[in-house]
Image (cartoon, rainbow, N blue to C red; front, side, top):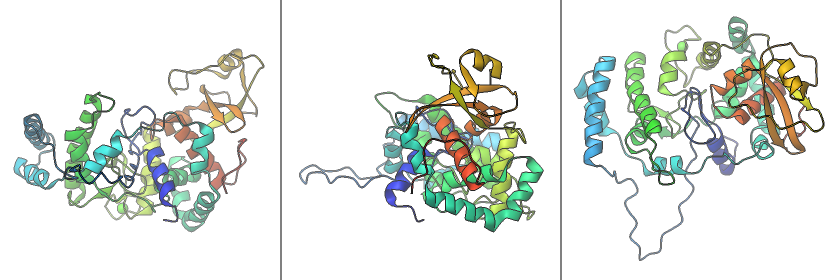
Length: 377
Ligand SMILES: [Ca+2]
């Protein structure tokens, strides 16, 4: 919790958790949804203008109908008594601050030169190396079992929560309730897909609580409902969390061993390739046309990329790849990304998130990675 408030806000906006749907223009987390930005201090309204009660729930007949439908569907889907769901839902609170946070613009216009210094800081790197030293045996054991490098597991936890320093203080039930039934209209547009995503996550939250013995009303997380050291959404928690310390529980809130194993298992679930590269820096021949693939699937051979003018600037295994071009502090940077790059984008769909995680991992491991920018003091 050494971060200042501004840094926390930026982080919250930038980091997305595993499993978030594609939604906002830039970040689409895989399993965790980003720690949402804490609302900024509101500017006081003029005295003569009555301000609305902050958390007045704008309930409508349509919402009442959707809640009734939700209760029946969740009861049937997860074999939970409908009156239990109904009683819990009645205790959930609408949160205007969460609607406001979700309606705020995402970081889609931020360049790599602006994004990188938020995560690649001296203090974060020092903290990551120290965390590695303190947890070396546990994280190495997970790495040896799964093939996911220890430094990548730690970098995810560093970017998501600062190794547990900022796991989110929102009530997850309130957050998911608000986003399921009151997902904001942004730029005049409703977003039924996002609304459906959060409705499903709310439903999965009830299942998770039942399966893990949690009190669904007390769980804390990001404004988007992501929980624990790796910020897992309820659906990802159910699907990918594992018991790393053998106590029979999957506790991503307080067990580092469970968190290490679960982050690694998430990557294994999306096809992490042990001992294979994530990125290699690329050179572009003079006069090379820009190349921006439609997605981050490794759909090209190195020969394909070479024919487009992009070649690796270090020896690298000949594997399926793609190209990522970033606006760095020294100009355009070209990177060849492999399957493991795509796997990191399942945690958060932003390619800059994946690059930040990877570069932080290399810093933690004290390995050169050919970046133009120094880290931020
Ligand atoms: Ca456990």
